[in-house]
Length: 473
Ligand SMILES: Cc1cc2nc3c(=O)[nH]c(=O)nc-3n(C[C@H](O)[C@H](O)[C@H](O)COP(=O)(O)OP(=O)(O)OC[C@H]3O[C@@H](n4cnc5c(N)ncnc54)[C@H](O)[C@@H]3O)c2cc1C
Figure 1 (cartoon, protein in one colour):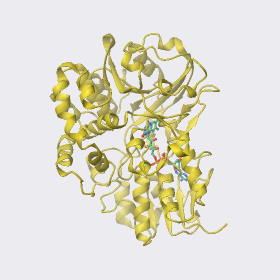
Figure 2 (cartoon, helix red, strand yellow):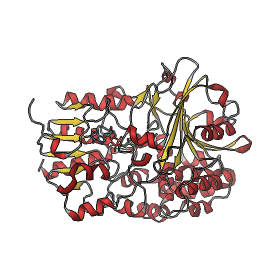
Figure 3 (spheres, helix red, strand yellow):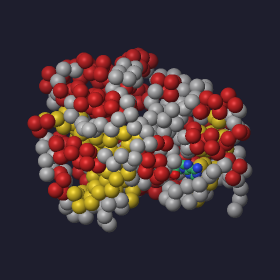
């Protein structure tokens, strides 16, 4: 074997995006993955019953669809088909009502009754400059905005707590919709910046429709590893890297790991100032996830919920806020806000004829080993009576299990670090180029760098571009 030009530790979407960016520039890249399968948060497996393809982590690929990294990638030619549901996302309320994102801002607003005007005023300026706003949201913070006016508007509204921004909306539906999107921040909705998460999620939903990948998220990783192999690279699985010194010598070392693993791997080799800064890095709450094999589609009372992959089952803004505040205070909510995905709405290949796969998670305190399955099922049953009768099998991963599954999910934090104000400005630390680790040729490329969590590959792409610049390539 010839010596690699670059090594990558971790084969999550960001590790593979970094590997591909370097390999396309002509470097020979070797990826070392600890688990037995590549893919990190983008794997598909039979978690419940034979013949049921459950996504172990990510399912909804709005961020991949909006990502400049994947835009430069002919996904269709590589056998990756994005399937877009009729309704991007829905949030049921008691009494069979629901808020739903369907198509454009104008179409969605028309379903929001008295909030139609307020929703248009909130979202249409962002929708008009969607490309510029999303490209900014998916870039390191130091990037200059393409459309400064839209960027300024996004920043001033985004910094608000979601509970404050929601005052512009009057209906239970409109307010619940914003709350469900903002809850993707995994923070109390009274915290600053939760609106930025809500607005970004809404914009991505309007722009991409929140698709899934036909056959399961693992297909995306299969396409990425296939291209890497064609370019002369390789992925070695079952190789946990404990120490940077264990890696073969290379011009660039890309680390798809979070600061905690970086400290373990690099230890005293890191300059004390950087080590100190990285130690201050904070992780957020965890998730408890349940996967099901079902005997049929979930019998949601509201029709929009039957036409979407993504259902936010948590009730009104007050209920969602209560659930997220409880988690922030270290408690397990009795009625948790649940993110539910039902890919079978658009992808019948995931389960035997007539059957369905389903997953849902709720936020829990860091490191929790509490099984929330009964509470999550109760929330789904509340909006879809008869759901429990359809359960053929279920599999539960507590937050503690999540970390055992992937050490990058510290305490079950699936976003590779808390979305605090400090860690939005400097992620993982305050540096002009956050990807460079102050060791020769070493870079962080995980969701602990900008733009953060999600399957978009942008952390990997930006980190690899830094490495290429440093190598004068
Ligand atoms: C339940 C759940 C649902 C989610 N849903 C969505 C969704 O619908 N849409 C979305 O966009 N995002 C979703 N996400 C988030 C998304 O999966 C992550 O943000 C994304 O995978 C991060 O990519 P990454 O490459 O930075 O890290 P990861 O995907 O975590 O990959 C890191 C890889 O590095 C490996 N590794 C770590 N340490 C070492 C080591 N020392 N040696 C060797 N290998 C190592 C790990 O095994 C892992 O394979 C979800 C996550 C979870 C857990």
